[in-house]
Image (cartoon, rainbow, N blue to C red; front, top):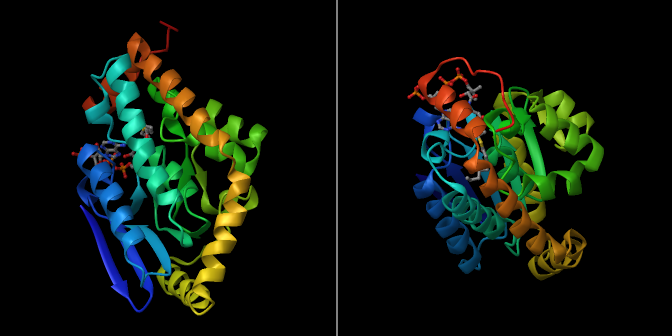
Length: 256
Ligand code: CO8
């Protein structure tokens, strides 16, 4: 479920599926897109904060839902996730991610769609997909290099390494790390500071600055979905996702 609350000019969107560490399945992705559309239509909202319920921000796309997909269905699922995340990124108002816990795979990719990322000391980041036999599929191959630079992004993607909040801050993936109890108050303080400024000027500043993201991004995302989908025709993807779902050890990857 995606919760949306509004106070004064600030909206808080909470990804709430704590029993699965807020992993994004199709229903959550649809909810996310709808919630982003609601925010877009509500002219009273000047800043959006996104966070997760419980100990996780978002632990990725739903592996159980993905495990039996083939290349075409994988590509479609990738495009669906990209559409939901792009709806967040394309909001005309500033978006702050308040990363309270795991931001892995699709969760890290969602955080990358925000303009500013604050993180709890308990947050963990990573793109674990290559360990699951797939590529990042919700924009990670495109947005991560645009935020932290190509070499560091590729290191994280190639190794599937999970990093702590302090390292995420050091490499520029997050703007600030805070004690867990200070995360939301600080996000609201920051949002209030932004909301007190001239709304048209703030929105126009975002529109101008976001041109830097580049129109090419959307063509690049389509290429990502294609390459992501192709991984679903491999035995390695089936083996690794089956192992996650059945909580068993992976066998070595074969390249098949
Ligand atoms: N998908 C589905 N279920 C999940 C996910 C997930 N990504 N993450 C956690 N869960 C579930 C677990 O299966 C478990 O369920 P249950 O209680 O029914 O067994 C519950 O959440 C709690 O998880 P754990 O018991 O594993 O909790 P721990 O605290 O022991 O571990 C971790 C936390 C380290 C976060 C661990 O859950 C984990 O490794 N999760 C997977 C992280 C991951 O690999 N994420 C990337 C997924 S791939 C992805 O996001 C690709 C994005 C592009 C997709 C494009 C669309 C096709």
